[in-house]
Image (cartoon, rainbow, N blue to C red; front, side, top):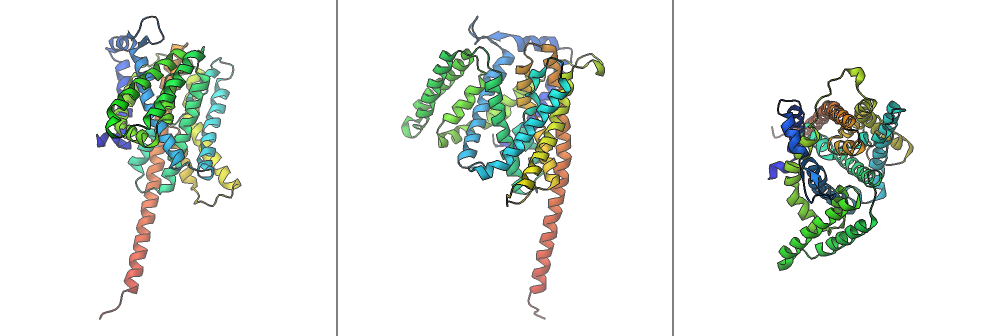
Amino acid sequence: MSVVRSERVAALLLLVAAVIGLVVANSPISAQVLAVEHAEFGPAGTPLQLSLGEWVSEGLLAVFFFVAAVELRNEFTNGQLTSVKKALRPAVAAAGGVLVPVILYLAITAGSGYSRGWPVPTATDIAFALGVLAVFGRSIPSRLRIFMLALAILDDVVGIVIIAVFFAHDVDLAWLGAAAVTVTAFGFLSHLLKGRARIPVAAVLVVLAVLSWAFVVLSGVHPTIAGVALGLAMAHTPGLRARHLLEPFTNGVVLPLFAFTAALVPIPQVGIGELSRPFWGILIALPVGKLIGIALATWLYTVISRDNRPSITFHGLMTAGALGGIGFTVSLLMNELAFASHPEIADQGTLAVLLGSGVSIVAASILVSTLNRYYLQLRRLRERAVAAVKTRDAPDVG
């Protein structure tokens, strides 16, 4: 289980699952696999009758958002975002990493009628970004890691807000109110997760979590928001324990399954000139927009503010920007939501997310590796300098 908790392993599983999904979707067995993905389960004639793919993206993915929300709350209470000063620099970077991709996407797709896809290139996949950083950046200073973690978490906040606000449809306030009641009860009871009552309380919490998810589905709001609400409502210490227990499941099952099903897209048999403008908008805005937006916004903040914390070098800013361009999980989800009524555009959008994230992965890997090499050489030079001083100051016993 400890292996699956690794950021490197989680990122590798995501990538492998997506590649397998894309290969399967373009293989002789694609029709059979897609038929299984579209098979529906659940109470007939209700919003809870979902296809297998929807159970993954709307059911299992809610567990991932629960874990992310617990981590988010921890960062705001005990982590890197406990004060405005700590949060301001990554918040400015996150804002730049959202605004510039949106502007690029809207400029490329202007007049096409597909402006609804603007959220797709705004997301950062925290698991993948930190996985690349873990694989290639073992000698990078902690301040860049902390900055990247805070940036990715704030990016998740933006993604959550976008999903909740822009992708809700025909909201039923009665069901939403019922969800609020069960989430509140969940949060209250989570404080009782101790002593002999722990197992029965945990069983009640599971029931309340499932009810909350079902009520959110029935309300018309995307059900992953239920996971976010439950994660934010849960008591701090039990929440961290739940996150620890669920992390292998989300890393090893939920995210790879979602990556596989989301990547089950037949490659369009069209020429480059026939690809839609949303395809080009996402493909360009995700890697280029994120890199420019994050790096430029952080640089401007550093120049304008009087923040006396150690600055991040230009190389470091470009690295953070490239890591931010790995949209993957949340971008794939937003693509599904944005183009739900245009399947052919959604398929092209999925390819654009995979390609754009792929470009960012390659760029980030190169930038992280060169930055890691620089700091490794710097550390060795310092160690040699310290050793030389110790040798010079050593008493002469001859």
